[in-house]
Length: 496
Image (cartoon, rainbow, N blue to C red; front, side, top):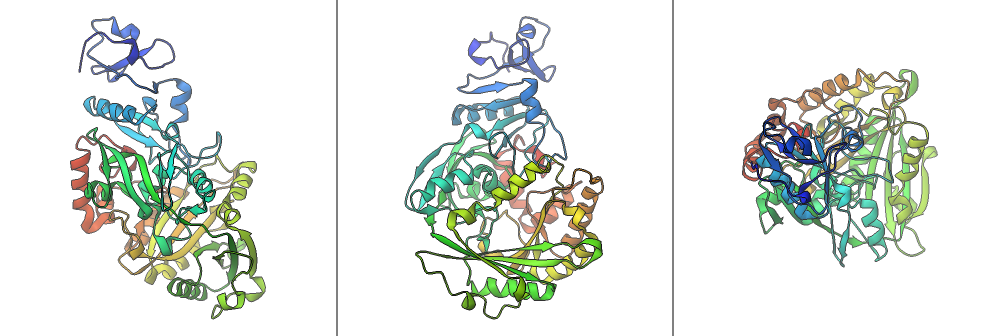
């Protein structure tokens, strides 16, 4: 703490009087009016920044909510960094003054907001929120990798890479998400069965730890930090740069939509395709039916190719047992398929769903229990539970996920269960969070793990220790090493 005179370089923007520092006595930002009052308390001057730290009501309100719109938690201030050094300074400043800090991806298109933060995961009540959109440069694209700042979206990188005949190997279905945000929680998409999570395609990161140190981490340098940061939910540092893998991009995508009326047949075909690897990407979806009727199931698979001759359709469909009359096959460019969710997002926005509360639930189920879990879910979910949303349900190999704190079930194959609800504006959502908790508890009893997004209320210390299992002590040790003051990302509530 310091009571020295405050330079104008340290002034941050506020509503009325300029904010010049943190008041350690009142636990509030001190204005210039307070600074001349000897009884105002001890002041810690804000460090000189290339960007800005703001407390304006409009900005605080903007950063008080996330995409899920289920919780509201206002930060004290928002950092719009002008450089990586601004983040170093603010993390150090926050640590010294007992404040919390979290990076906020703020991804999306234009003024629309989309992110993996669905239940306050990026919230920092009473702390400092960092706007990742201010660090949004693609620094370089090489033949096998790209170097990006954390606020770059996968959509931006994909288009830049495609211009050079390349693509990220693992992409989320919706691409307008920040790279820093998805690799912090994992980042899952339709090629997970081949490449793992997006976090598994990261070659190195630059990261500001909770101790305020800017470090480079990779599999051969600061390995413990690298492992804890990727899929570690922002608990050990703020990622400020990442080197991510690129691969040659195919030219075209032959897309198959296969429909099933029977869950057992659907599961068998999903796992047959997973094991033989005949398709380049593979996802699946549950389609609830009205009036208590059994749901349908859909497999969406893609055969990528170059040139003008597509792969043989009959060969690709051999040994599969969908409802043949309902099968749909389309031939698209690779980019058209990769950006396929944009049209869906536009329809949600035009229909008034985008800013509705979204009680999402994201789980990794052991394959041996996936059918049991889905049969139970089918008895409880109705089309109104999804609204205009969707329920993803598809398998992947757990050994493809190499980041140690991205937890998966202890079986060779797991299923993503991703309830992405966009409730109708007239739907009562008050019981959806308790429902999520019940389904989570049931899934855990079957050996499931949660994916680090979604809305599961009342997670306790015991819940988190059970989630990490034998790795809990290692994760807690990484937290103590790299963020001993517990400065970073409190919204996940992993460490209280």
